[in-house]
Length: 274
Ligand SMILES: [Zn+2]
Image 1: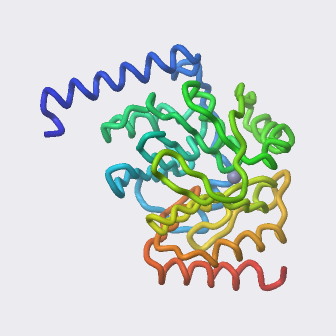
Image 2: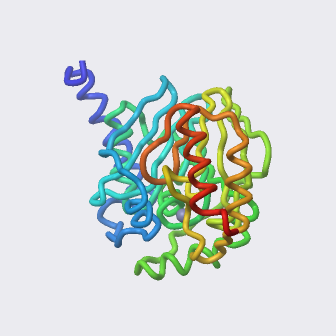
């Protein structure tokens, strides 16, 4: 089926549409400089057992893109299809091509994305949003206040320019409905001053991004980092009823018992002295 002439034609069409979209927005592969690895990724690489790179189609409309190969490093990305196709954390701008190729392989048209949620504005999560000019971009109001202060030094450190960006709407703590999908947005500062986590009750799934990883937590030594705030954020997330955690980097944590043990481990390992 995958190699049928019809499917090949569909994939070729999706590729062409995406290339045209990138060309229109000026973010084609040729215009994207290659930059070094993000330090957050390196930390996670040390602290967690990384899986091989793979896409995971959890349900018809729910796709997880895990990135664990250092050669194609990026943050994990979520695509949720529906009336308002949603992408959460597109990753580095210069990795958007990798992401779009994966989506196309799954038969997903990247140009159909209408909302891009960025959990925080570090380059390895937020940079790629600039490539989705046809989508509305959302971050928290708190993070927007800090965007220049938090993100700009990190781009500069990597020898990259802040991409041109526009924020179309603010994420606030509470419910967010997109089409038929209902999410809860939780302000979870500590790694970044206005970072958010996203909880999807329908699948008891949590996207805590760089707050919680498998056996680790996000860095607090970056601009705007705060260990006390991170501890409170972790405690808030630990109270949720969760069967699947997809962090910003590294492997997913599956099963309520594994999720619980991961929170217990983190509290003991990182917060006993805070
Ligand atoms: Zn980060």
